[in-house]
Amino acid sequence: MSFQLADLFEAVALADPDREVLVVGDRRLTYRALDERANRLAHVLRDGGVGPGDTVGLQLANGSEYVEGMLAAFKLRAIPVNINYRYVERELRYLYDDAGLSALVIHRSFAPRATPVLAQHPMKLVLDVEDGSAEDPAPGAIPYESALSGASSERPEVEGRSSDDHYLIYTGGTTGMPKGVVWRHEDIFKSAMGGGDVVQGGDFVSGPEELAQRLPESGITALAAPPLMHAAAHWLAFHQLFTGGKVVMMPLGRFEPQEVWSTIAKEAVFNIVLVGDAMVKPLLDALAADGTVNADSLWVLASSGAPLSQHNKDRLVELLPGRMLIDSLGSSETGVLGAKGGATFQLSDQTAVLKPDGTPVLPGSGETGKVARRGHVPLRYHNDPEKSAATFIEVGGVRWALTGDEAMVEGDGSVRMLGRGSQCINTGGEKVYPEEVEEPLKAHDAVEDALVVGVPDERWGERVAAVVQLVPGASLELPALQAHLREHVAAYKLPRDLVLVDKVVRSPAGKADYRWAKATAAQATETAGS
Image (cartoon, rainbow, N blue to C red; front, side, top):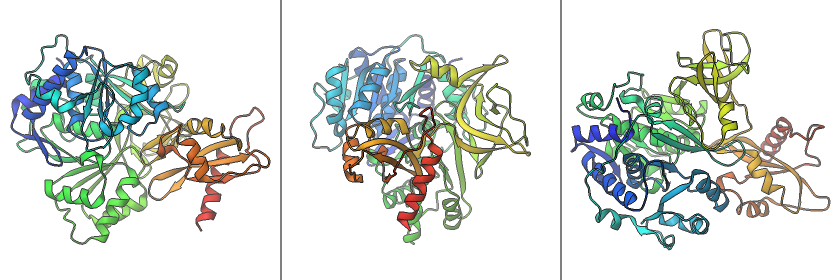
């Protein structure tokens, strides 16, 4: 039985073609219309030379084109690739090359950064999506809508679709550059897209036919607030597509709280997915400030990709009593693991906390380990056998995916999260790894040594701080440092605080003392803000 993602979507579209599935601003698409647009794009891609196993880059903000791009690639047994549109040239160059992109679908406003990369990484096809930008399209790019209008709306005939087709999701890498996680279609469908179960309780369908038979009379309407370039948003979108639901998105990924509330009321949104305090806090602020907001339809709020503070959980209960709050735990390497209650979550038969030797941490032992999942897990990291071996392990004939989250198991069996084993900084759902900022930072003429850490931030959860030791006699201010770094890293990775110290503390072997750096930065920024 095939769990190929295009087969699954087409089964739903065939069962109820006139049901509305996607709303983005003024664009409203039924299952039939979305299927036909994806078919047209698939023909355009295939005519451009894209075939099974080829990778198609999606350098897009939120819009129907993103969903169409993923479906079109799956229809051809090609592999869509999520591209963080905040990346600068250096990061784009790495991702284009690592993924081996064959084609690119890109919003016009992102063309200036992509153009120099495309000069060294030629594509079989580049499609330009109009977004109102005054920028010039990427050289040689074909207008997206014109290309679709001239293509067939019939489903392309493609042989060999199977559950083993590949799905690829790029996420922040421990060395600073993104890393691709390779999944089988069946595994990602069941671990992150609901498996055909509306309530995502693990009651998986047996195949496309049962998926169509299970469609509820009226599907749930959900709003995907985060960018679709992040797994949480497109996992929600595909869960909706596979259960007869409707996906609502803000045009081009705009996140204006009043506009979001207006959309929730207009579309009768039942469920919204957000990213931690960075999205939840502005929404709650707007709700508190405007007594006319109509949130009657909204009953489920899910946060994924970044921790949600207890303060904002309490505010949510106060402002929206009776609603369900889901603070999700998961990663690109594991799919959706479950929901957290505060800092804890419950183990299932598919999850465990494993010690370094692969044995489970016993409840109440006080020992720590890494959260792990078995069953439907990824195949590997793309082009990285060393990281694959460290993350996807086999213990007693059972294959596990390690999340990198350190945890301990309480006496009642609940898991207490202790944080990432690495020094990853999570700022508003975006991952920042210290080394990727430190390298160009230390290249500044005034910098002798530096460490980069995260410090608490009310809105973003964490913000980036640089602890810097200057060259004797040199001076440096934050704006100059940020200007230097803008050529090397995306804007969200820039330090928001500069803490000058006499000496950066390192071990005798030269290893960074991040605990010291974090404490130093936290104290300095707290003092400055008081």
